[in-house]
Length: 439
Ligand SMILES: *Cc1c(COP(=O)(O)O)cnc(C)c1O
View (tube, rainbow, N blue to C red):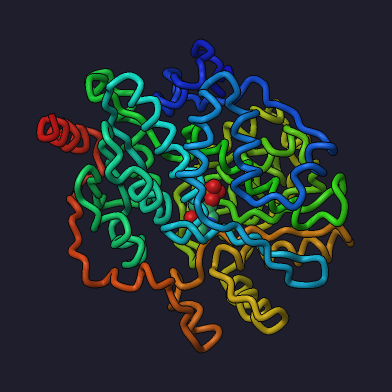
């Protein structure tokens, strides 16, 4: 697989190089030059297969020639060892539950797959790498858990102080070992800026920094897999176009969906469902991309004011908002609408939605109503509702239970390091100190 930077000022890279770098040297994001294609015959053959079998097939096609087939199977089997059930709600709507991984959010797909690919590459070369990840909540825990104990890696997770839930904080800051959690006085966008500046800083090159945010192409590839499996569960016959409602923040999930469509998945429309952080819907309406500071909402993993993957989406549509709008409908969902959606899904279908899935559900209903569309709609449910027990209690009067494995989180000690000033210089000192300690 050859990859091109979205800024087009860096040389083409092979897959391993793109995986290792995360960000291209010109500050752009790596994007595959070509994607493999599949057709209706493939969809027919994959129907009825388990998720991991579909994932194996797609991984082989995407990374053919990059890794031996048995290595790819090992990566898929190790990373994607949890179920991906589609729950039919009725009236042509279904919920694709992407939250059965270890951190109860869909980011486990990308983070676990990436961690295992990295470990295969490092094993070959006897190398080490320091992975930086900025998180608004779910990415950090998924990446930290994905890399915990992986030889040759140190993971540094940056999160905004006071802006993630206590459970999310526990999931990333109680691991220790090769995982360092950094609590930043700032917002998610500050964390993301610190990561970008460190990776582009020539002084830090000896640390072999890489990023595991959704900017790393290795995270996006496995996210195409569940679009295919969700499609096969929802389509009444292979070939029928399906609508996907995607709760969107940094736009990695949506980008992976568009990649799956480019590979041949019959998609009627993507609904990019956002909360008040509506940079993408605004772009689709006005053709103006106006990144700005994020505002806090109930669906906090989507509180992104300057979505990194926008540059990938824009590149896939040659910078044309009009063409992007043919594939993607951008809908903004307010806080009262999110709460109403939680009540509505429970009342009508007995489904308990976390606030992120609720944003997508609300947008899906509005889209169907406005478009008069009868295509099946798959709502991506990106987090387990128990991660947002407070708002569920307020709306439904009870708290969903965490899976047994996660119930002891309150008793684990927090090991976070504080970064009181969100400045690149302070972060650089911290990284240099960490690398001195681990070598
Ligand atoms: C990260 C996240 C999102 C947003 O996904 P993007 O790929 O950043 O658009 C939505 N829901 C949950 C629960 C998340 O953790």
